[in-house]
Structure formats: C-alpha cells, structure tokens
Image (cartoon, one colour):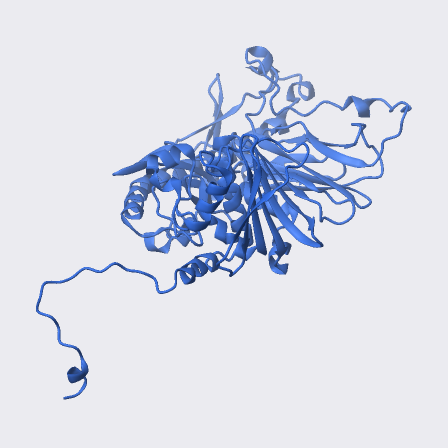
Length: 562
C-alpha cells in the first residue's frame, strides 16, 4: 500500500488551467514594502514620482512635526491622477497596489520621458522611513484631500483638510512621521542631497527640475539648505558613440571616463535615468565583473531603458531577454573601450615626454642673455604668430591684494555663503593656477577675517598646494587637456559653516614668447641609430628610441639630464 494508496487518483481527462491567487493579498503587500530596506532609496522613489508628474520645483524637508522628526516631499507637479477627483484619485492608488499608469509606456517612451517606475509600489517604501505617511493632494484649486497610511496596517483613511492661506492651486505633499531612528540618521541634509544627486542624476538633468533639501533639524548654525545638483564625472572622457544599439530594444546611452587615481572608480548602471547598480560589476548574472568594466579605473554611466527592475528594492536587473541583449551589446562595446584605454595610455606617455621637453626648455630659458657670444637660431612663440587666449595662464594679482583695503562703512556680518572664483579653474598640465574662496555675509559683504578654510579635490591628476583663501591648484604633467575634477571648499566661522564647489579643467598650455634661443625639442623615432640629439638647421631633434632614453622610462628627472 504505502503513500501511493493515500493519494487521490489522477483524472484521465485533459489538463485544466487554474489562476494563481494569493491566500492573503496583504502578505504580498507586506513583502513588497519590506523589500525596500534603504530609507534614502525610498525617499528617491517619492522624489521620482514628483519628477514623473512634471514638477518644476521639489523641496524635501526634514523637520519636527507633532513632537517628533518628520520628512516631507512637496512638489508643484500636475498632481496625483489629475484627471480624477481628489478623493477618487487617492482611493485608486490605495486600492490598486501593483498597478501604475506608467506600465503602459514602451521602453522607448520610458527612456524619452525618463520614467522608471511601473509597478505602483513605490509608495510602500515609506515603511523603511517611518511609521505613518500622509499623501496630501490638490489640483486646480480643488479642496485638499489626504490619504493616511500606517506601517504594517492593511486599512487606510481618506479625509479632507482645510485649505491653508496662500496654498498653491496645485500641489502634492508627502508627509512621513514617527521616523525610525536609523532612517532619520541616514536622511540628514547634506547626505540626502548628495545621495539624490547621484541616484536621480538622469531624471534631474533630463527634466531640468530644481530640487532642494531643507534640514531644519541641523544643530545650531550649521547649513540647513542644500541644492541637489548632479555632479559631473571626473577624469578623461573616452571617445565613444553616445548611443549604443541594442538588438530589439532601445539604444543604450554610454558616458565613460578614465579616472586615474580615483579612490573607488566604478561604472554606474541606470534604467531610464534611475540608478540600478552603483558598480556594473554588481550585475553578476550578466558576466560584467571582468576588465575593462572593473579594475581599469573606469567611471561614468551606462543607461539602458529596457531593463526589467525588481519592483521592491529597485536595485539590480532581472536576467531576462532585455538583460541578455544588453550583455551582448556590452560584448560589442568591449573592444572599443579597450582601444580607447590604449589610446589614453599612449597619450599619457607622450604627455610625460612633453613634460621632459618643457622642463628642458625652462632650464635653457634666457640662454641668449647668458651667452651673448653665441649665434642662436630664432625661436617662434606666441608673438611670432600664435596668439594666446590666456586659458590656463597664471591668474593676475587680485586687485584686493594689490592695494590695501580701505575702511569699510559697515563691517562684515556672520557667514552666510561662499563661492569659488574662477569657475571653472583652468590650469595647464605641469602648471598651477590659484583659486579664490569668497566668503560673504547675508548682505553680500566680503568676509576677510575670522574664517577658516578647508579645501579638498576630487579627481585624478590634480592636487592642491597651500591653504587659506587662495590655494594653488596644480595639474600633473601627465594630465591630458580636457580632464576635469571637482574642487570643494568648506568655510567655518565659529559654529557657522558654508560650502561651495567648482570645476577644475586641464587646458592646453600657453606657447612661449618668440626670440632667440634653443628651439623646442622634437621627439623622433630613430631606432638603431646611435645619436641622442641633433640640430638639423631648422629644429632640435631628440632620439626617443635610443637605448639610454628607453632605459630611463618613467624617470622624468633622469630623462631631463639625458
């Protein structure tokens, strides 16, 4: 007998179809909500909804409300389902979890509109932020309706609120209260602004939305307002086509840089502008954790709107047909990236050789004055035909430093803002250029005393020399023109702080002046010949294939002596 005897007989009729149905739908809702464990990502989802609603201005605030910490997201977009009445619209989103109007968009439409969400579950992420959430909505001067949700509670409440004086005709506001302690720490003003700038880089740039983070819970006189501005990638750009075809799907946008010396360079991956992987190597199912995608100091962004993104965590991609097509496109892109890396390495070596030449020219500058008895050939420079545009030239003496400051009618007040001049800071490889921090009070008066400066540089090939209000920005000799970095200054005056950033860019060096002296050396390939350098009556040539020169590869000082 055994187990077989206890089983019901199998009917011999044709197979029947059934419809899957959850035993408890709220268990699935609970699972979706709990799958979002990062409160910052949950806030980004709420902000993404505002961008999708064509908002032009978004304010994210952290403040005290009803005796405890709260987080709000307010926008001036078209509103929640603007074609419906307010109560009907809020009722719809509460009773249709897992349904979204964005789902009907094609991948190409999603790419063009920079819309990522399509599952209608982004609102559930508030469970990782706090215990309660309210969605307040008003459209075209209507009454204000509110939808109230509570963590781990299946029931919601709909209500109508009094319209506040001065309230705009159309707005949407999300209010999360009773914040979780761990989540509240992760949502401080500066940290949240920097996270949103990186996480929503694509949608912010594509939509042009203005976004701010207000942190009313910051202590004392610490900075409380932060603009959310996506940062430019630093490094040397790879010359690749901006759009990579993907068979059967929308094209992939590619923006890659070689970030030599960066602390943790990585290629980010996004779907329709929203980040799904901080490092392309995290997409293990696509076999992209090998060079050149990792381990080659590459940074930048690859955006593919055809990905299927896990609806809960919104991190990673589903390994389906679209992901396979993307992986095949990356195989086609790989040799192009490797060729670009080889080109940049050749140019880096050539830049190192040019640095040796520049050092030699500086060493021999003024030779005609020291040795007037010699007949030297003419040397062309900027006065001999090439006119400089002064890009990358040393900054002239600041008029404020050239003359003593006169008496001011009103002394400067407390620190309010700081800016960096010039912006961008342009510096030639092997040279330096001074940047200037201008700290001002609330009335715009320059603060000259009583403030301290803390400078930092983000980007390979550049460094800082000196302190105070006017440090020198130096570009290494091997840095290629076009490379960029970010310069940051934080200013303190007692308990008050302010910060600013500026772009640093490597530019072509200025040509020397015309006159008489040693012509510019030209590196030539003369393998097998014994001469080291020679003057052929027109130019000075240096044999860079001489065995002694090759033996000194990587030793700039020794090559200069050579």
